[in-house]
Amino acid sequence: MTDTCDHVILLSADALRADHLSCYGYHRETTPVLDDLAAESLRFTRAYSASSHTREAVPALLTGEYPDTAIDSDYRLATETIASTLSESGFATGGFHSNPFVSRAYGFDRGFDEFDDDLHFGKHKLVALAQRALDKVRNRHYARAEEINERSLAWIDSVDGTDPFFLWNHYMDTHGPYEPPETYQRQYYGETVSDSKAQSLYQRAIDDPDSITEAERQLLIDLYDAEIRYNDERIGEFLASLRERDLLERSLLIVTADHGDAFGEHGYYEHPRYLHDEITHVPLIVRPPGGADETTVSTPVSTLSIAPTIQQSVGISSDGQSLLSTDADDVESDQPVFSQARGEGDHDHVRRYAIRTANGACFCERNQDTGALEFSACTDPSLRDELESHIKKRVQQRDDGKTAEADVDGDVDEEIEHRLSALGYKD
Image (cartoon, rainbow, N blue to C red; front, side, top):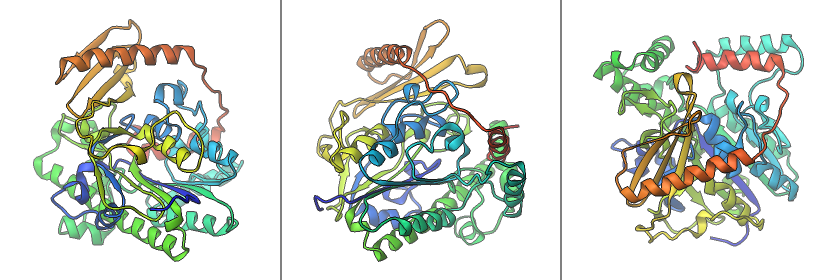
């Protein structure tokens, strides 16, 4: 480990649950690259996302604030991200991904010198039509990991070699529909599945989870694991490119996920707006500049700590706790970790909350119209009072806060709707 942090690199994977990584004890070898990375990093075994879906989890990840203040009622960015903070401190900033929910349409390009969200519209409808044609040709509605790598490495090479930089790559490959390349399908399933079958099965799992047979559930898991292995190898290629450029040893590297995916454990698939472990327990690996002795940290932590960790690593003051200062031996810590998720559909009047400590968890729903609280699954009665107190503080802070306004281009909105449909979000 060195004291010098010239660059900051944040790699996040969409819908990657912790317990499907081999370095987190999974029975399959899905992540040999991340296994090796964990051996020279801090690996947090009880890391939880601030929410269970991208629209609230990524804003929290990038800002260090809970979703109820990080975004407005339309899910547009309402506060400054780590990109803005580092840009003001002289860092070149680049963001590369293809998730429509955190695109420029929702203000997430703010603070980035280069922001590639894979939505290449320009200001002309013909460009939007060309983008849709490209999506159809590649039979994919997001950029594969190798494309994200190529774009981000090209940007790194364009940055003045003397300038510090902040890079955020967000990989979509582990998000459904699970359509891994054939080589990876055979590795985990033994044969190949057509994209149309994979898409149909994934959508049916969301729409009618009770119809999924055990064999179909296992197929979904096999395809998901294959996507994880594919993504792991692409991350390995990216890290190798950083080493070739002599950048990795001078960088703070953080690898995590915005949330996980469920496979029927609680009667649902994908990642609806609940707060169970399957969709909030995420991998979190932090490699300081120069690497570190392999360290396993069992203390519960939140993805909200990523932003202050970055700030403090580059000498910017922050009120939050750095992950690098977390006591690895304090496994009995009662430090609470909170999560939240805004309901949707018939539950759009509800906001769900959860608290986790080393010793238990508690869940609650708050009716936004009446303020009524309904608790469930509290393993420790004392957590109920602590969670209720947290909810009251969050409601007060949200009510006292201000929301941002953003103009959204109509063409961008139309293309986002098209892509969301392909990803299983729209009918």
